[in-house]
Length: 322
Image (cartoon, rainbow, N blue to C red; front, side, top):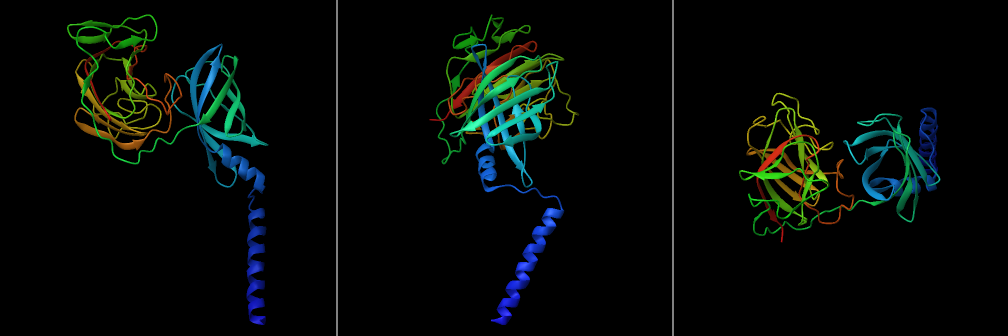
């Protein structure tokens, strides 16, 4: 018994010593309730901002860094995913600020509260305008079985815009069998919506131009005049904008026909550029800037960006999962 008591005593002293060391080292103490509240907030959230009656998509992710510090990422209605260095959280309420990206003005500030598994709050934009928003946990979109593919569908008939709609005043035309946006204007999307699919697109961009192919209307595969010798980035040619960088910039260059073969199953994406795989079965965390909505669990269209410069497409074929 004495031997066991001695072992217990040493163990207790060691535990006490470790605790005292942790306090001395500056490790914060977190209550059980605070841990539970933090756990409820941690994760990915699909947000909808009410901008004067127009629902506008946004997204955020909250992560735990170390013992109690919350950090994250935020995607607005435009631009790429932005890092959040600290999410302030107390008694079910949270807030954070991030500097402007493409906007001009003050820091963007988000405040919110969590209740019954949902979020709601306000966002103050860099121009000082304030809007209300709501959020729900983003779906996992994990598939338990491999897809069975259906028959290929030609989304572009080579003659006219049958099956397509513009987001505003239309500048898209069909000339000599080529779907063309001759200048910046509206984006273009399919009337049909899709869940999982294989997509083949052939496109030609001009020097200095910029476009993109949105998968389900929510995840942009970037088209941009990037140089092959450029270090790959998620915001350059063939990246999933702001999230996934390609292994290399495998473009043939401007004024030449390039091709993307993209497979999207759940959140997992593979991108093949001009016959070479540059992104292999990687997870897309959330929507990218410019998405049509933040309803990630729903089917969505194929959507071409037309508001950043001239772009041409000559072949658009999709093979949906059954």
